[in-house]
Amino acid sequence: MTTYDVVVIGAGPVGENVADRVVRGGLTAAIVERELVGGECSYWACMPTKALLRSGAALRAARQVPGAREAVTGELDVAAVLRRRDSFASNWNDEGQVSWLDSVGVPLLRGHGRLAGARVVEVTGADGTTTTLTARHAVVVATGSGALVPDIEGLRDAKPWTSRETVAAKEVPARLAVIGGGVVASEMATAFSDLGSSVTVLARDGVLHLHEPFVGEQVAASLQDKGVSVRIGAEAGSVKRNDDGTVSITLTDGEQIEADELLVAIGRTPNTQDLGLDNVGLQPGAWLTVDGTLRVDGVAGGWLYAAGDVNRRVLLTHQGKYQARAVGDVIVARAKGEPVDDGEWGRHAATADERAVPQVVFTEPEVASVGLTAAAAEAAGLRVRVVDYDLAATAGSALHAEGYRGHARMVVDEDRKVLAGFTLVGPDVAELIHAATIAVAGEVPLDRLWHAVPAFPTVSEVWLRLLEAYGR
Image (cartoon, rainbow, N blue to C red):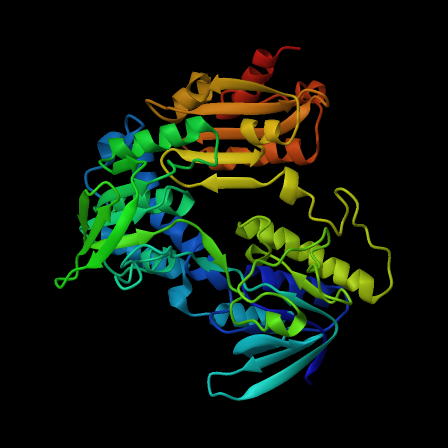
């Protein structure tokens, strides 16, 4: 069978969820993958990175509590950390994910998928054979993104690490240099300093500069406390891989940095370079812009959809899976002639992409946020009030860890009296953010939030303290 209701290109978490929703809705679907089923998140991002980070975080947590501190007698076992990382990456074997596709009735075609025309996908296998798939209703592009390597003199010839090589490293370099100051750069600087590397971060635009200003300040200070050299404003001018395998980075001011490995983590680029976009009137290598139901703009007939990183709305796995659920459901609705609920917060819309995106950065301290920063809210034209509170001032934080340091901020839309954004920075704040996500996505009025009483003594008491600071 080469004709299906829906053909999905890309079997990462986004593509898997699209295919699952389509089949649950009573349609047929096939999925195409040129690498490992499960995608970036399973093997080179979410799961293995958090496995790398967790051991160091657990050790720090123990050392911050008297009684537990005295029981800790050694340092991290690097080999054990790497083995645990390997297990969470399934040792880069996708048999489990393939079995799941089989269990939900989605056939897998291994190979490189390209658009050959309207609703037609050609799949070229590793042996060069080509299979042509035809979609009755829709083709969904879920090919994700790859690491962006900038045009710095000598950089590509130096064969730097990207996020993939860093996460899958078999050995820990004695010296690691990092170009970038965003999420990947900050998390990997944390992980590799925990594992024993001497780390230098070249953060031209600052550390986590897209977050609230206090976030970058606290994370940079923590990295420096760990011995990481954080160079705010530093910019690489040229890079050279030396004969002995080391790397020399010459900054634009002439200073030279020496390292054993170099990680480049400055952004992402869409995996659309060899996708056949030119066969459907689109630009190869471009991000795919979409409408509110994630149909690709500029394609006649409305049969092409794009979900996940490739549409550049939000480059986060959980948000891509959210889009996937909406895409799968709306394709089924349109195929069956059912009403499309694409209004604000409708079943077939991805409204949260614009207003209620949660994100966690697993640095030390952790960063958890949802919605808009104060600057972004003001830029969007909202009349806002910002309320800050020292997270360490709650009774729960003092119990959680000795010397707890943290901060909380809520951004209030003053016209509607609801939260537009919420940010936490501090130890273990990742598990606190979903309450704020519900408040933002649900547009819960502040007057009602007063009745959501936080349990005592927990760090969540910060909600009460923020509301008290706001006033009633």
